[in-house]
Length: 92
Image (tube, rainbow, N blue to C red):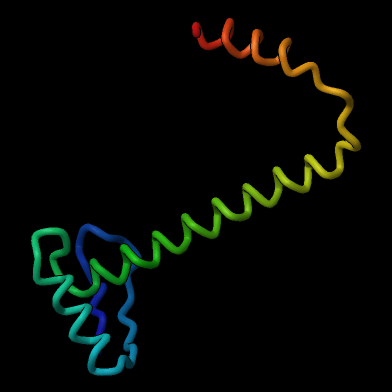
């Protein structure tokens, strides 16, 4: 399958050739025949963007988990006070 990504409104585009099994090629063609994607290049770019966003979200979550772990042991929590604070904060 050839992905033609030389589009006048998308700067710095290059062409990339990829090989797909017949079933995958058919899938890409089906997805790019609809109103959502103009062609197979648009569909592949969409998939790549989704993968990039997913990886960025995972990295952000991992950073937050690491920050939490590095912050030390949690102290005792007064659940009733926490619940009252959240209700007041969110108008519940």
